[in-house]
Length: 111
Image (cartoon, rainbow, N blue to C red):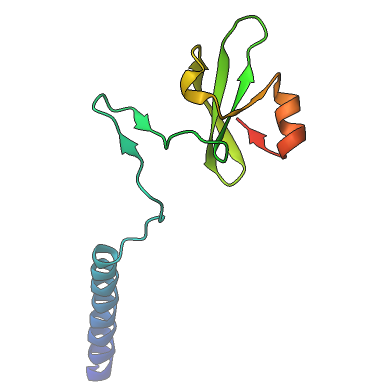
């Protein structure tokens, strides 16, 4: 009888200890992905780096005089961030007539 109580008490302490350790580890160690936080403007919109030939290009919209600006998000993924009417600030960027041309020339993924 005495050994059953001792084993029961030991297993209870063991379970409580394991639960306590799991709780402490869950509070102490928080695993998060590592990436630089994006910078935000006053109105809350994300601010990208200044577009250059290395991280951006333009694709002409067929029906208008506007260009879509594609900016590098990571490795080979480029994201459309908006339309550009005035090309003064973007003179040095490579300009394409359509997405197929941009994909063929640079082996890029466009979203």
